[in-house]
Length: 387
Image 1 (cartoon, rainbow, N blue to C red):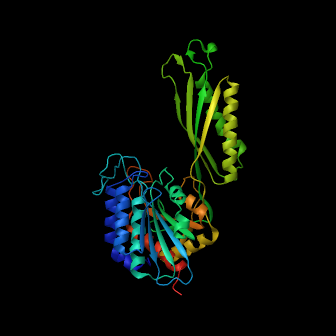
Image 2 (image 1 turned 180 degrees about the vertical axis):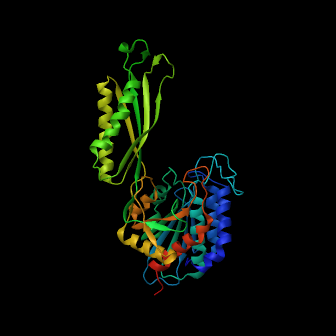
Image 3 (image 1 turned 60 degrees about the vertical axis):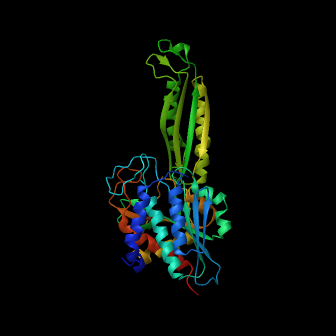
């Protein structure tokens, strides 16, 4: 595989960084150790500037090229946070923190961008400025949004931004990408139902919230099946149900439902939110109860810009020899906040035959490190060639 020779030489070193980060996972914005390690490495590499505290615990490194005749600035993003789960890999470098694990490969993403940063700082074989971005809180904390709100794009003059994610099940080292929507918007809903509790032997004296929630779960499924355009993908899932009583002879006064909505277009996102609220109020009123809906919008749709997707694909082919078309999936990714501010692309790289993401036996495949590093470096050198 035509990876850059320097990354083959650096492979053991970068693997060491990755495994060190893996042993010390940190959740959401509490990436203090990881952020400090990243900042220390970037300074050691000779980056022209290293800034911490962007988006609370995010780190940004600035690497100026050999020349800057075009004034172009390209951003490369990695995520640093882990997940609140217990590792079961049995690896010698397994997590040393109970209840925290790098089960999504962010340790690998961070190591690969660090490797690319070291190479770019050594060679400076480009005309422009490379910005390496290390964000916290991708797993549910919208760390990318926090960094953008702190002025990431304007402060560093970023014009295009790129990111990568590993994918278990895709052959080791295989790239895949698609233009347009790739990952879904991920929203949450919380529904509180209020009825009239009472004795289970006298249902006629109650407004039964258990029947209400049962009717509602079924009714909510008609939103996607009967209101959404079947050509446009959407998922609505009720994932948690709770009532105010667990006694066998009590009809509960209240009940609560929670769940998620995934969509690939803003039009569908708006429709499902509207219909969900209408259906909930309708069912509750029909059953004689009341309902309160809290609908929280999470990450938006991850949309790859057409032109930048082409650049990312060309770099992938140059590094790996091929690039497949990625399918649209319903997972969410907060890199979408950065793509809302600047054109760019999100590419995936095969992790091989491993356990799935967010699985307690998942582990990042260190064999893909030189491939990922090469793609990040290739993006900079290809988009900002020396004049």
